[in-house]
Structure formats: C-alpha cells, structure tokens
Amino acid sequence: MAQIDESTPPYLRIVAELRRRITAGELGPGDRVPSTRQIVREWGVAMATASRALTVLRQESLVRAVPGVGMVVTGAEPPPPGRGARASVRRGPAQGLTRDQVVRAAMEIADAEGLAALSMRRIATELDAPTMSLYRQIRGKEQLLLLMADAAFAAHRLPQTIPPGWRAQLELLCRLQWSIYQRHPWLAQVISLTRPLMAPHAVAHTEWALHALAGHGLDPNTQLHLVAALANHVRGTAVNLEREAEAQQDTGLTDDEWMTAQADVLSGLFAAGEFPHLARLTRTAVDLNVESLFEFGLQRLLDGVAALVGR
Image (tube, rainbow, N blue to C red):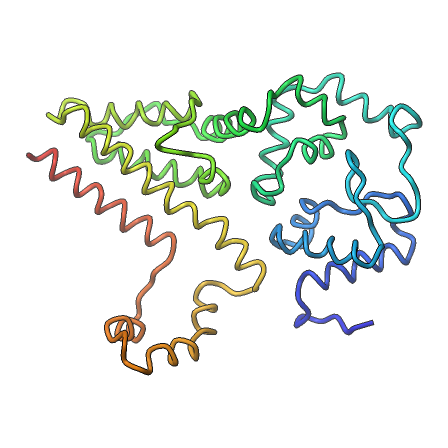
C-alpha cells in the first residue's frame, strides 16, 4: 500500500480510509458508504474531491451505485422495495414527507456540494424516500430551485428599521444580499436578472431598493436600471464564491499562496516585455480578492447613483 501522508492528494487519503473500513469489515457488503455530501463534511473537501474518491472506489470494484439507495459496498444486493426492515423505513418518511423537508434537504446538498450534485433522486436518497414521492410536493427541478431561492432569502429577512438616506439603505441591501450568497454560493447560479425568479422574498429586495430611490427625481427606467445594476454587481461577484472555495479545498492553497506558487510562470510570461503595465502592478502590493471586488464595485456604483440623484 502506498504511504499516506500530508503530501498525498486529499482524494487518495479518503480512498485509503474508506478502503480500510471496507477491508476491516466496518462497512460490510450492501452497506451504504458515505455520500459525497457526508465526505465533504467529514473531510472538509470540495464536492469534486469527494466524487473523485468514490469514482476510484468504483473503479476498484469496492463499491457500486444502487438507484434510490446510493453507493454501497460490493457483494450483496439491497433488500428489494416492499420487503424487509429497509423497505419499512423508506415508507415511513414518504408518507409524511413535506415540501419544506424536500427544500431543506435540497439546500443542504447544494450548500455542501453545489448544484451539480442536486437531483430528485439524490434528495430522495438523503430523505430515505422513494424518488416519485417527491413529486407529490415538487413539480420538478425548476419549481424546486424557485423554492430554494425563496427559502434562502426568507432566512435573511430585510430589517424592519430602515436607515435614513437612500445610500445607507441601498448599501444595507447589497450587504445583506452578499451575506446570503456567501451562505448559499449556489444561489448565484439560480438568480437571473433578465428572467427573474418570482420568489416573494427575493422580490421584496427589489421593492426595498425602489423605495430607497423613490422621491429623488429619477424616472422609472433609470430607477429600474440602477436596481438591476446593483443586484447584478452583487450576484456577478458572488458567482466566484463557489469556485474559489472548491479550488482552495482541492489545492489546499489560499489565493495568496496560489499566486506565490505561480511566480515562475508569471516571470516567464512578463520576461518578453509584452505586458509592461501588468508586470509593474505585480511588483506592487495589490490586495485583489472577491471581497475587495465587492467593496470597490459597490462604492463606485453608489457614487454613480449619487451623481444621478444630484442631477
């Protein structure tokens, strides 16, 4: 067996530990192995890393996928539906399954692993219920995403006390939206400005912004474009959150550490002198990250609103 140490890629460490559990009998034939979501939580890795580990175990024929059950240890068939203790357990949740349960389970999967891991079958597996039972509560994935987005906004309600001044109100709104995207990075992939989700708690944010701009002499077209521009800045910046988190977990490097590791590549790129301005900037202490982009862009947009209000 290959030596496992800190230099071993995370997915191989996970493979080694799950392989040990299987060979030691801690996980027997037919037992479910940890799902990608559980691996993400237990090992603190990205969804891609967890999926890669399970793929290796499948290639080694140690585990196999069972529809409606998940990944199980090779060697025994799970009890068929309608028989045995497993079937009785699966029937129980399905009978009392609620829409809120489905939405919460979907959000937990998306929070831990991203939207790519989300499917009705996967949610059913997490809830230990037949896949078709979910369709009694949710028509399909489009409605599910709408309900997930509405629940995300509902969990971070707008304050009842409104600060004085349009700028303070808009800044508070944008910071609240930023915190929602940080809590649910997948949400940035769901929100669309050209085809907005008709989610009541999300629509309330638009109403708040329009209220802040009302009474300042701006025509409706300008007001709506300003509201959309601010929302688009927050969402557009938040699109990077999920990818950055996955990259850091997969590589084990922070953004600064990754840039330091690219020093030789950058030196070679700038050696020919084709990018003098960019080369000059790299020799200066510039702190550019997702947070700084959000802050800088927000203040410049609000400065632009101030110019329009002033006119």
